[in-house]
Image (cartoon, rainbow, N blue to C red; front, side, top):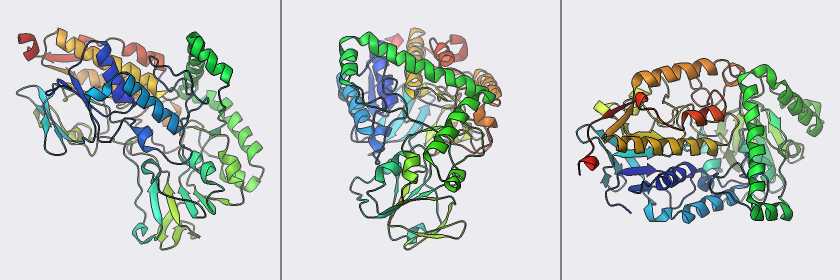
Length: 492
């Protein structure tokens, strides 16, 4: 591990690991990974709630350069994904270049040396030339502030900060939220808890999740004939890719709506409950949920849908906005993550003392989701407007890791001390993508979602196919950047 690394990668999740492997493949070895947790895994290390699983086909939710032939099922659960991440981490020997239990407190760019001062807990300051922030979009839990929460005698836990010692057996449990985590939690705890209240403010569109175990023959075929797994992966990729056409042209989503309503009618025979579960906005405006066991769980006698938000907590339960009181021993907040401005709490100071809060005072923005004007040699993974609307996030992560490694190589080849995206390039790029997004279902579908920030701008989704993003990230153009100075490395 380098004592004075030229590159610091922050985060040992899927993004940070991919960035490190790409650097290694391109011959760049003078880097270190800083991870505040005690092990690799990122979001899959933290999200250990009951039923935690991926809603992307497992053969797509894996690196293209590290295929796994023995996935247990078509959609992998959290334990298996976490094992996969650890296996890749170990295979590439990243333990030798990783410092665990090392939390980054601040990043400050030194204009005199064109280096970053990265301060970690304990007081140490690293001075890399390049920082790659792989901290992830799903990093900071969104924890609503409920009136009277401090008076509640039971336990309140967020799904992303699960307490492994929490026993729900025989407890009265309230699950707050009906997003992708909630629809996994509710079926997993129904029958174990004495009763489950599902607190819903806005119903969600649901499509069936065709999950099944892989047969022994399929796994044998994947192992002895790797091309078969590539075919399976390509079929999954292009089926996901076609969906983006509908997201960008909302009238085409009628097919998805028909399938969703058919699923609802089939699994919820009770017309009154069915009405409560029927959304009034365009399908796709919020993230479409994939589940085949959530609706059946709601039909159980020991599960109740509460279609009113929480007004306040009391000692033994909570009162909803319609005045009803519900007793509870445990409250599970399945309320997602703070994605509006994911770096709002970070202490990042760029060129000339510019803070990230000042740069993003009108909302998050970047170029290709990776570089920010005013922050030389600073690269984001999964930054603004680089999220796949329907594609596996790992496809985007791989594209970005390749792009960042190419930027580092370009800077070194030019003998530059710093590389910074030009402000006019960033500005024109964001103007174009937001014009495209204005026509998308995320912007025009009539709902409030995590895609939109407080100003109503979509700061999350990429406005097009993942192929178009892949093409743009194949090779950075020198014309996009300001390359400054002769590097100390080139002078030696």
